[in-house]
Length: 170
Image (cartoon, rainbow, N blue to C red; front, side, top):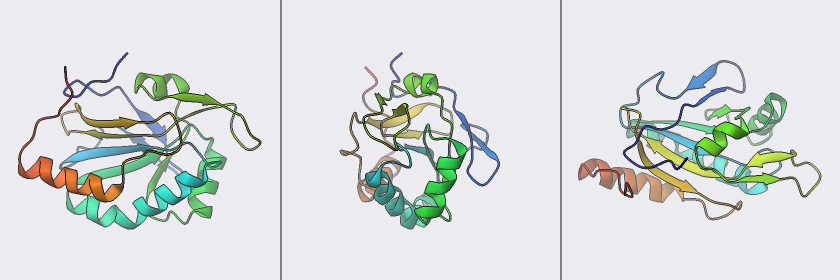
């Protein structure tokens, strides 16, 4: 399955580190749900990337963007990442099933080093409109090459100001 802009986003529901759960579409954002998929506790680039996101959460909130970061990690690993990485405000989801990651067209890797889970998802970033359709997606097959959050903020501003439709739908 290929996830295309302007089409319904696949179903997504994950438990949250610290308790509770997050389900796509359960609470309608003003502008977008931003789903940031990270590789897991084993990834030092994820630590830096999510740390940057944590500092920018107020900027996303001002734009009506509901943000979650999630991974295929277990509850214990997600809670350790949240604590060790100082993520006090960012919602951290865990237990993303590999089948669901595949439904979002994410790349799946197998462990090559100690400390990595047997299988895990590579990074992705998605913007989903309040109507549940995909607006933006970025996926990578490696830990690097992720969209910088300052560019995401600027892109959201431009898309909102110009009332741009999602692109890449063909």
